Image 1 (cartoon, rainbow, N blue to C red):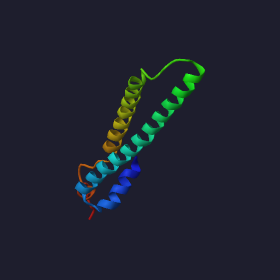
Image 2 (image 1 turned 90 degrees about the vertical axis):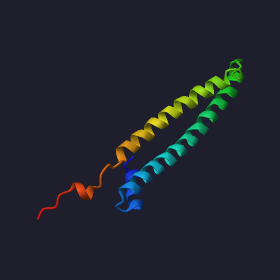
Image 3 (image 1 turned 180 degrees about the vertical axis):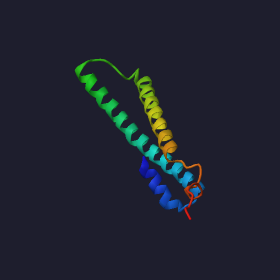
Image 4 (image 1 turned 30 degrees about the vertical axis):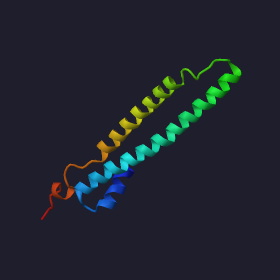
Length: 105
C-alpha cells in the first residue's frame, strides 16, 4: 500500500493536490483490478462447484444461484472498499512536507 504513495509522489513532483488526486486514482484503479480478478475467480469457482455438485450430489443450485452470487459479490465488494479506503487513508497528505519542516540556520 505504500507503493501507491511512492508512485503518486513520482508522478506529482512536489504538488500536494496532484499527489492526493493520484493516490485516489491509483487506489481506485488497483481496487477495480483486484475486484475483477477476484470476482472472476469467485464466479469460476461457483460454476465448478455447481457442476461437481450436480454429479456427486443431485442438488440443483440453479434456483439459488442468484442469491449465492449476490452474497459472494457483496462480501467481495465490502472487502475491496475497506482495503481501498485504508490504502487511501495511509497515503493522503494534508499538508506539504516542505512547509512543516523547519530549517535550522
